[in-house]
Image (cartoon, rainbow, N blue to C red; front, side, top):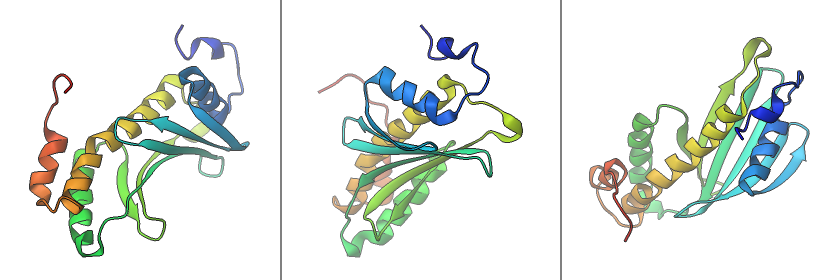
Amino acid sequence: MALSEQYLETEDLHPIDIVEHIAEHHEWDFDRIADDQIAMAVEGQWRTYSITLAWSAYDETLRLICTFEMEPPEDRMSSLYEALNSANDMCWAGAFTYWAQQKLMVYRYGLILAGGQVASPEQIDTAINAAVLSAERFYPAFQLATWGERTVDDAMQVAIAEAYGRA
């Protein structure tokens, strides 16, 4: 059954209700923080990612934030920021930033639903999956550019390369 099939006859859908259904469908741990906000943990290959989605009725935007801890050495921060710029050049939906005070790498995405539009469960699921896939794709490059002390161009080759099979 498609994610959207149970919503076909519902008129007033709240985006966070849809997200809760998706989290249940995937069996992700989640916490409905408020009517307009939900937080969940999604297991990746490299990390467990903290994902928060929040609905803003004011600007009709569903905001997605995917975070993971990262504490690069202070002397490698310029390499991290250069790697962030390179990663963002390759991301068409969403962007990375680093919140130094919280020591968090952050992937942000906003789905604008102006004019009373409703996001489909497939759209929201795709946004969540894109966030996790982007974090998974660039996590090794961020690590190599900071802890591995590789050049950013060299580190980004890991993100560009297509992996085949599993070791």
